[in-house]
Image (cartoon, rainbow, N blue to C red; front, side):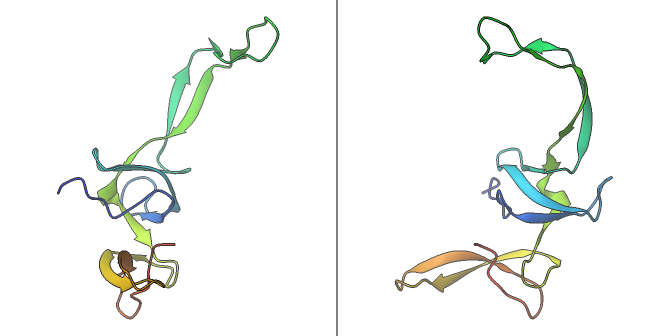
Length: 124
């Protein structure tokens, strides 16, 4: 199953390599097919945009123009370059899976921190 990713949208991750190494941020988008994640305010790239008319103009008959110039956007990162940050121990860790009982007695699969001595549940 090559498309399984252990990192989900909303997770706090730390970048392991590249120009933003050591920085932390929240995952705003996860793409399991391409094995990539987008982290807010990290891996920023500059793109040059032309001024364009906006499609949803709320003004009466007038066209609104989206400004052009150099814009900084967040680019996707490979999922192998990020590691999830455990909310309990506060350090980057690998992700493991365990089956736990919920309040109704059903077995559910949860993600857990694999740091020695931690083992806390990563899911909200």
